[in-house]
Image 1 (cartoon, one colour):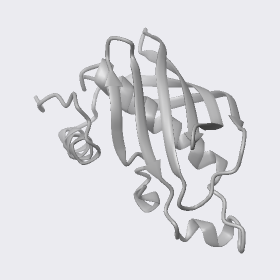
Image 2: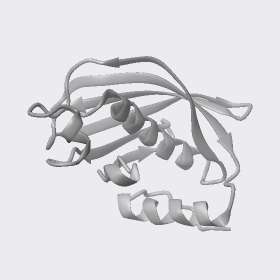
Image 3: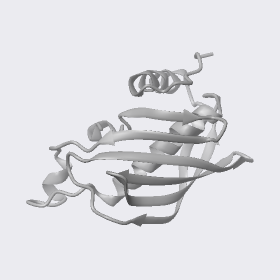
Image 4: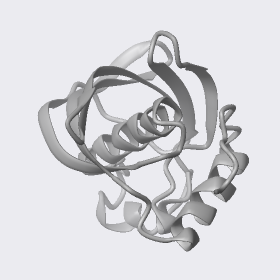
Length: 156
């Protein structure tokens, strides 16, 4: 994870476009300035960043399903639950599945597990927009390569 850059997915473990599912991994950094205030002497990964991690995993799924033709933007979070604390150094396995896509929106169900135990889950809604410019598209292509995204589509 690179919290400073809000890149919370380290690697894509599995992308199944037929089943419309993805599984990614991210290791919470041992040290980060975010833990100085959350909380001194007892660092915890903020719940909002757990939700963002699920949103990013879902976003990669949507990019694959949409063949990098549109960009997912988080629009709504529903039924988000943090079921246990996440600590520095832990490895998150994040799974997402597509529930619905159409009319410019998509919904996913996402879960975070640590050591096989459920730590968080949510239903997420995304607006699907054209990439605003080639710079953002190029950035996403570079990040896709870094995280091992298997279905990268060449830039048009």
